[in-house]
Image (tube, rainbow, N blue to C red; front, side):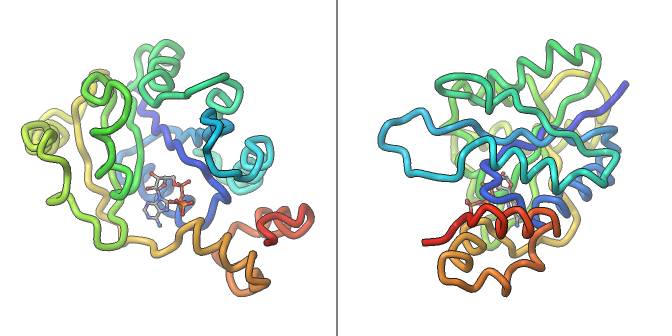
Length: 215
Ligand code: ATP
């Protein structure tokens, strides 16, 4: 049975924290592939402006080019309107019917997951792997997840195989302090050179060539 990690995000821009945790997820969970899934354009009229989806997708392609276990999907970029994670997972479920699927995320995202569209069905249909981030911790998950949490941790331990969902894995690898917000702010302040080392080299070059994140 193959194991596939699905790593959704804005990736505005993708940074070394994303790449490092994706590699650690692949190692710890013996994933055959990690598919990066950049989010599409915001569908709310009042959503904040951000880098075009095509440019965020291009940066992900540059970042993962040398890593054979990594792939990128444009499924959320191409879908019109709201792109719910639940629907994204169903697309991969149909395409890889026999695989074990893992949704990869940082702790800040897990703490919001109870606000996501059809989150209970999502947690039933996919396995979750979470990377520690900052001071956020599992003890802060919403009370609505208090029943799911111990059950999902135990399922990942005791029943590691199977194409069903409902497992939770806490990444053991050390946390990364990087965030895209910090990187955008540095570029906007004219201090891009100070954060270029936090980016895959091709991504830093792309940002420079396209003049991204200038205020
Ligand atoms: P922003 O600062 O714009 O919110 P970000 O750095 O959090 O961006 P996203 O594209 O929003 O990047 O993140 C995609 C996924 O990667 C999310 O699940 C997020 O929690 C996770 N993530 C990003 N950076 C880290 C990190 N340093 N450690 C752990 N998880 C991370």
